[in-house]
Length: 236
Image (cartoon, rainbow, N blue to C red; front, side):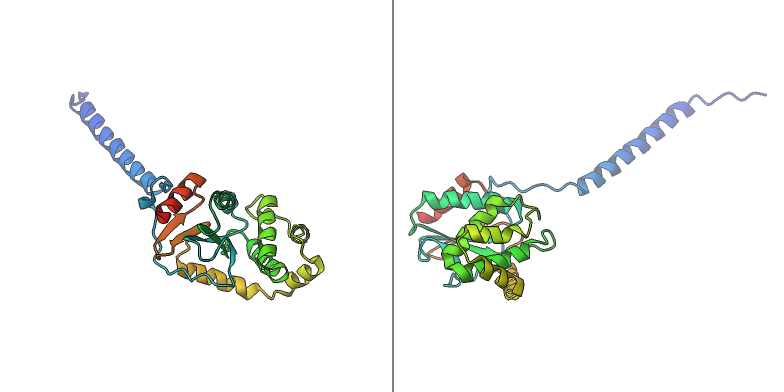
């Protein structure tokens, strides 16, 4: 005897299958959401993470453009092989042209991230050598040129460093001797430790500090207009 199919079986199977599919879609969507990283926006300062560390005061050992007693001092922690640092360096050059030296000063502090850019620590050592041989002016000539010629992301040939030193007007033989000696290796390590304690989380991380002590965190390579807005708010 041939059994007839239960007329309820087909609809019931469809319902069960639909439920399983919906459940699978739900799980897939949930897992996908867990893997999505929402990029922070630079259009809203309040959405940016605020570091809790204390930025060491500016001293005569710092490399600075402008008056150390300016109304606003921007302290930047930077990695010379970071593409965002290259962009922000150009922004800061623009900033320094837009303000008087007693209004805004710019302090550059080494913060090479060796885990991302293995060449950056040696380039930071080169910056210290440039400062030793040419003072603050030599440092900035060397650093500005370095950011001009590097394509970032560990792309700069180390053999270019003496050429940059020559461009900056430094004694290239003394520069090579300084760089090969490793005399500033620990100074770079100490700079990274200090930057981390200050609250630098990546590069570029900067702090705009007013004479009254008000501090605004500048996260990442913010454009000129946004940096200017931050500075203007502190100058009021």
